[in-house]
Every structure is written in structure tokens, then in C-alpha cells.
Length: 278
Image 1 (cartoon, rainbow, N blue to C red):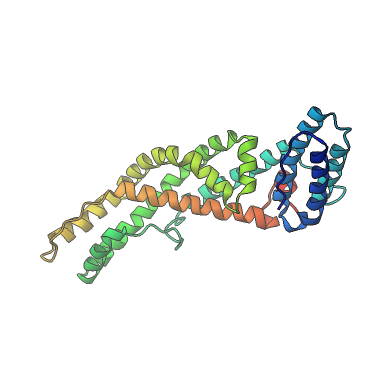
Image 2: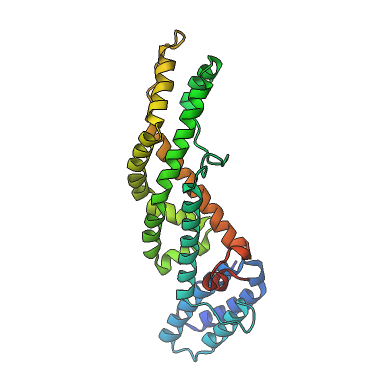
């Protein structure tokens, strides 16, 4: 809608003026954060244009006026530092809330959206054992897997915080260009490897501590001994629970991000209210 090619010359000067006119008309159609992103990018371009072309500064003055309007007449404008700080704060709040919620008792087990169930390849095992009267054994295995995921979630927040500290202005603008879960996607890209490395040993220990490994072995040993079993099952339990735990964690972080973007009550600090407020 707002594309423009910037090169030196009077024609471009007129083009930039036309762009600002169009920005004023269409800015109401953009959410506040994308208005800020669009304008901040343009302000950098205009500054460069003015420096290289000897422009008299009228474009910069006009830009300053529009930036004030973007944030709703009379309110102080957002600096690049504000945008980065706001996004870091949003990610920190979302990450800490997610880790806290999921590491609590029943954080996974009582949440139908992320509850760790038997893997798809074990559904036949589960159904066979339940039909054979071993449903209680299966239930214990499922509970133990979720307890392991809850235990591992305690280690997530510090890893998230380290990744958030390294966010650059370019990262922040990339997030602002994205959708309601763009920050979560950024965080996942930066942390999935260290989180996997951190989660797996914790989950292995937790599975032992909660007897999940024993329950798992009981389930599959029992299944493998049934006369109707012709293909024995050998599933990597720690790997499976680690994958499901991380999936649930990022699912929760995305929910927290959406709350901050869309629900004023979730903006619990001044910088969140400044950056994400309408």
C-alpha cells in the first residue's frame, strides 16, 4: 500500500510528500504497533535522504508531526529503544508466566490443550491394555509423563531470558511486522536447541523420579507379552515427552503474547502500556 522507491532528486522529494499524505489517510487501518514500525523505518530513510540531498528539513518536520498523530495527538512518541524494551518486556512476562503456570502441579496434566498423552504409535497399545483390564497402569504412565513435563518447565525461564536480552532493533522490527505470535516464533527460533538440551536430562531424571520409566516399561512389557502382540513396541519415552513439553511451552507463550497485544489488563508494566497501548 505504501511502497516507494527512494533515490536522490526532486521527483523523490515529491514522492515522499505523497507518501506521507497516503500514510495519514491509511494509518487508521493499521494496528498501532505496525504504524510505529512503518514510520520508524521511514524516518531512518528520510534522515538519510535529507543528509545526502541537502533537503531543507521540511520532510523531517512533517514526519515529526505525523509520528505524534500515530500515537494519538499530544502523547510522547516511541523511540527505537522503547519498542525494543517493550518487546523484551512482553517476551519476559510471557515466558515467566508460561514457565510458572506449566511447572505447577497439573500445569500440563489438567490442560487438555497440551496434556501429554500416549504417542500415536502407542494408541493401539493403550486401547489393547485398557480392554484387557490394565487401564490403571496406563493412567499412571500418562500422569507420570505430565509430571515430568511440569518438572522440566522450571528450567525454561532462564533460557528464555538469555535469548531475550540479545534482541536487536532489527529483531524487534521483524517481530512488529509479524502476526500476534511473531514474538513467540522469534523466541522459539532462538531457544529450541538450548531448551531441548536442557529439558531432556531434566525430563529423564523426572521420569525416573516419578516412576514414569517404570510405568512405561510396565505398559510395554505387558503389551509385548500379550499373545495378540506380533510387533513389539520400543518408543523413546524421554524424547517424546521432551518434544511434547516444548510444544506445550511455546503454545502457552503464544497465548501470553496474544493477551499482552490484545488485552490491556495483561499489560502489567509502564513500558508495556506505553508500547502496546492504543
